[in-house]
Image (cartoon, rainbow over all chains, first blue to last red; front, top):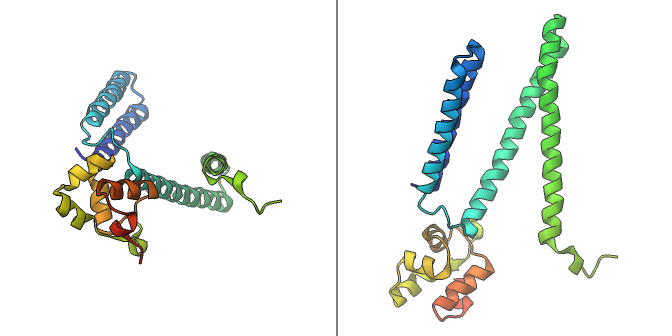
Length: 145
Length: 69
């Protein structure tokens, strides 16, 4: 199996598990909880088995690292922009609402999202500083003061 | 990957000379076949480390295998 196929199948499995959990919670049935537990366990085992079937699972070379790097950075950028757009839309809805109950509900949705986005940026900045120190090698700079 | 900025190379010619498949070369220099394919098609410029390994595998100078345009 190719690595990309593995990632696509894994994301579909995670989506199915998320739907199962959502329905179990929204139906409020305690009886559904064993089904949720079973689905999570089955999903984890399936992903584990599929991972072992990747042709080049153990080989990571510079091209694969570069592809992973680009895909990860682009995922982060797109996720950030989408979530930021959602939180801004929520906040503008909050400002235009008259109903206090819904205002509070929307605010409780928008604010944690914005805080998460700020935390994401902070984590990114921390890792950037860390990897700059690791790879950039400024200690060999002969022109700095 | 790096598109227009990629270097040209003679890997295919050297492989034919040494009777090596893409898989053989990949195994010899410790990368995946996908990487050799990408380099041959000028879609990816290898690191210096990999470029030297490939040149060394062909007993050639790096500038004979890779041409910077």
